[in-house]
Image 1 (cartoon, rainbow, N blue to C red):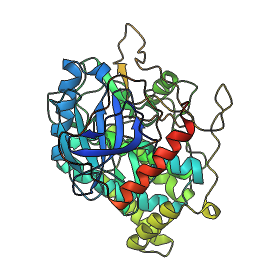
Image 2: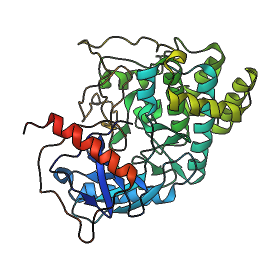
Image 3: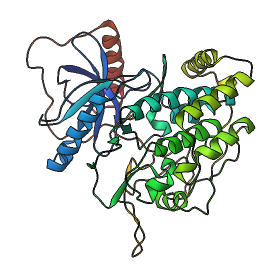
Length: 395
């Protein structure tokens, strides 16, 4: 996990968490690596002052209330929050490890055995979320963290109560990441059901095994249109033969044609067992593989169409894009025109990825009382970050 150093304008403490560095940035806020009074690491998400208006504060408060209801061993746990602070913030469990997107781009795709293990683990976790009356709505490789204890799902900021009439978005908009958005989500169908997460999980597993999403286009808007078109079949090129039947039904255009998450777990388990391994053994192998990231075992990702300008690293995708719902009178357009990478992914506020320092906006905070806490690990991390920042500072 790469962590960028704090800038002089960053606060030192937020809500009792001493900040150690930056681990992500998105349109709505900044994510820091923090440490509690007792030395517990946390991902601390702070809403940017520039977007703290009444609507953003309300959405953030709703996100906090939703996060309080979500639990499970494969879910990054909610720790604390303050939606009424001058700069609203929330803290969740810090998962030490790369996200799935970064792992695939750095080390290559996963073999079918490990992809099936990942599928069984995530499907079981999502089934637990659905039993709590929620759907994720924005599952994507960047929201799957590969930690030392196995994969965990993060960023439930778009989650909504499946049977609720309340919404976090305007009535005529859809929100999500186009490359991993289900067709009904892209077409503005409401209410959404758990089938959107089944589709997104299928897209995530396809990416894990091939390095590409089901639909690829030059722009997010073009991808959005492909996803919503029933005449366009998903691209399964490069997918392992034993996974193609499952991926085909998970990526079905019609929600009712997709399997249940329980059926996904069973199919993934069958793939694992057909290769002479138990599901528990495969899970341990997945964790070992992603923690150690052995380059010798990596599979080169399936090549995606090159972007207009040559890049040496994948470009960020637009984070959960807000799109006007389709209507006969006009073509929907994206409100977030951020550039997209080959897999259509971005670094959203909950994603733990390297960030660049933000421009100065306010003075650095100081702790209200008592000395700052410094565990041995925190001191080492802080010292490394200070050295990096000192080497790049112009003064």
